[in-house]
View 1: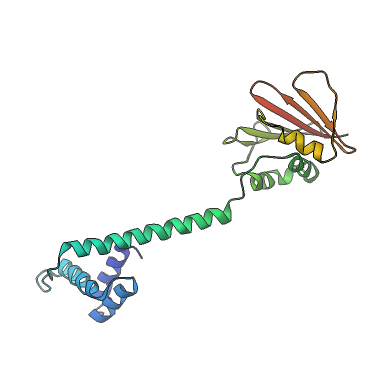
View 2 (view 1 turned 180 degrees about the vertical axis):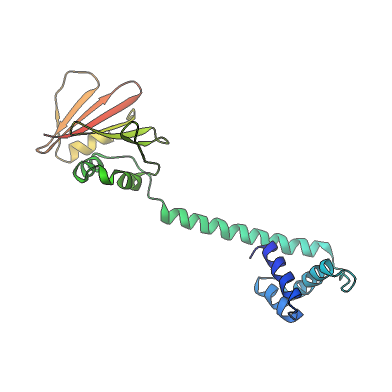
Length: 205
């Protein structure tokens, strides 16, 4: 519990007539030293019933250290839990590969949103444009005339082409600048690069 929750719990226990020993035990269970627990209880009682319970004087410095330690501990625990949640719930972020495109082509559009978000987070289906978009990565995927189209920012390395060449795709000689074609016995990849974007199409032969 945080500081406010502990304080509220103690107030309810006082109102219900719980003995001081039980309230102090609650504070000790929350990591408060026994001496500090007595002081904290006296502060809350003084706040509720100032005439019946005079405040026990204690150096303010020690109280500040206690609450600061409780606050820091709570923040650290929260950050740890958040980190573990992100690690478990988010997939490893990476770019789309030719292998991913082939799996999507074979699976069909019904699974695109789910499968794309396993590769990198942020994919949604845009019904107006009839395509899947990841605005954070400025990428899109669509199906047109039995082709799977993948549009992304200009590929500055040759990892996509290297993947194809290492998986039994052969490069077809093509004279048009900025256009590369790779084929195997089943598929054809066409990679077209402009100044700002790369368009990759995948089709059955």
